[in-house]
Length: 255
Image 1 (spheres, one colour):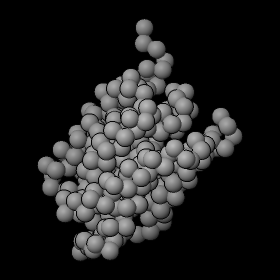
Image 2: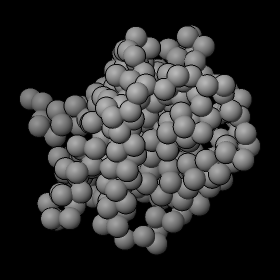
Image 3: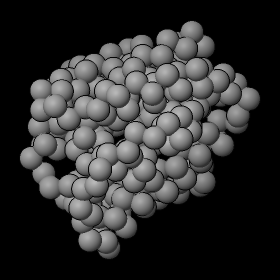
Image 4: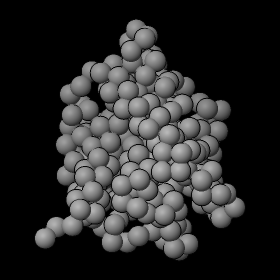
């Protein structure tokens, strides 16, 4: 007999996979509140446990994007060189930040990022593509911010990188999603090792998430390649804003 907790974790794994492939995310930021609310994990376990599942799903999605020549490795290299050391600092910082504060930060961050895409997708005209910008003045601060936030909030960093790549580096959205997912892969490996050493990962839950995330990440990436950029932004913005509001209500009301 399959337990209800197994089914809940499996569904969350499917969601991680779809988000990974479709939106260039590791899915960890969305999975954290779901694991806390529906699977009953403690805040720190809910925060870090999705990270290992982000690794195989990011590999699966990145393969699809790489085959379509959408990953900008020059940008990814600079981002990762800056992000990896600051990821370590972010993880260490979780020792000194209250669990509820971490959950509130997660919700606020979801709302702000989702809101920017919601506005772009629904209220603004679809932008034409510009020449790609690879300025170190943009990439270095973006890499530092991504590394620190990905460590502090136990996320792959994609939710930071996609807006940066689109707005500041002028990458086409699909290339931004692909490049982001590749960076997520590397940062998830770094974050997983550190959080595992701190005892913040529920290995059994992480394995279940991984099994269900991988095939859906591949499918999500296939979907993203076929969709219009504006359609992707509308889907992403609407989902993240609605989910952020729901999550913040749960955290602030103590549910």
